[in-house]
Structure formats: structure tokens, C-alpha cells
Length: 230
Image 1: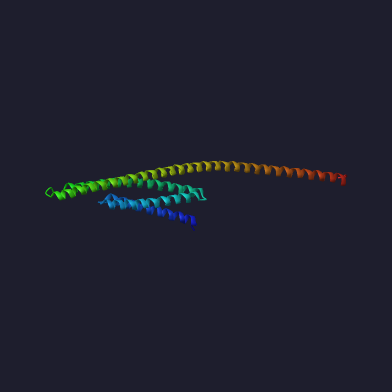
Image 2: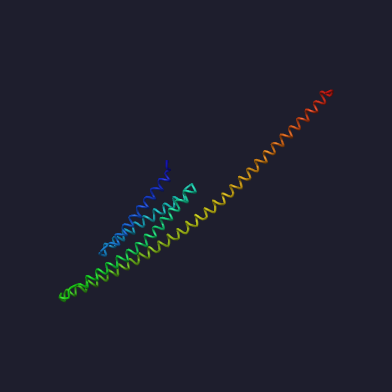
């Protein structure tokens, strides 16, 4: 029967996979997003929320690895944690690329719509078109600034994740070195025990021979004193 700790590890792993799949689906939605900007911003908000939840669960899995009693289980869970962190970084890269591609497509579409406005419209309509163009440009600039801030935040989080990966890697290496040292100490202890066992057997044999010689001497003396004629 699986222990409670094993059940928690499996549940955490399943939630990580679920968040990963949801993020991939949202990234694909961003690639296919035809606009407008409000829809793109809503999708980005959902992706950011999923990344935050995914990061928390990965940290939980890392903590569970540190609490494992079995060395093999701890190393296995740490390896899975590092794999999930690398996958998260890959998803963040795909997210940024999808945003840039979607923004470019939306911008091109809006420019095409503006360029195809009929020339036969009156001055009033041309003025309205100019105002709309100014508003659209302002929205685009604001959206690009928002994307830039978001990308800077993701880069910072990626740096933190890379630092955590490096720390985990050093911990695994140090653990392996400790395990090798412990193995050498165990082998040395085993040799000493075997040596002491052999010495104990030799001491017992010498004691037995000494006792036999002692009793033989006693019997000989008794024989000489009690039965001198024999």
C-alpha cells in the first residue's frame, strides 16, 4: 500500500501536468487569437495565473523531495522537479513568441482595415478615421508596453528558476559525493569487523589450548602425588 507521502507526490505531479497542459492550450489560443486587444490581454492574464499556480506546485514537489527518507526516492523526485522547471521555462519562451506573433497579426489587420477605408467618404468621416487611428496607435503602444513589462517579469522569474535549478543540481552532486563516502566507510567497517572476528576466533583457540595444557598439567601432578607407583 502506498504511503501518504507517495500519494501526495503523485497528486502534486498530476496537478503539475494539468497546469502544463492548460498553459499549452492557452498559448495555442494566443497564437490563433484574431483580436481584438482586449481578448489577447484576457488570455495573457489567464496564462499568468496558470504559471503562478504551476510554479507553486513545482516548489511543493521540490519540498517533498527534500523530505523523503529514501535516497533513491529523493533523487528521483528532484530529477522530476528539474524536468518540470525546464518545461515551464520552455512554455514561457513559447508564450512570449506567441504574444509577439499575435500582436503583429492584430496590428497588420488593423492597419489593413484603416488603409481600405473608401476615399469617397466626407471630411467628417476622414476626421473620425484619423481619431480612430490615433486611438488605435495609443492602444497598440499601451499593449506593447504591457507586453514588455510582462516579458521583463517573466525573464526575472526565469532567472530565479535557473538559480533554483543550479542550487538543486549542486545539492544532488553533494548528495552523490556523500553517498560515495558513506559507501567507502561501510566497506572499511566491514573489513574491520571481519578482521576482528578472525582475531576473536584465534584468541578463543589459544585460550582453549591454554586451558587444555593447564588441566593436563594438573592431572599429571595429581597422578604423581596420588598414584606415585603408576
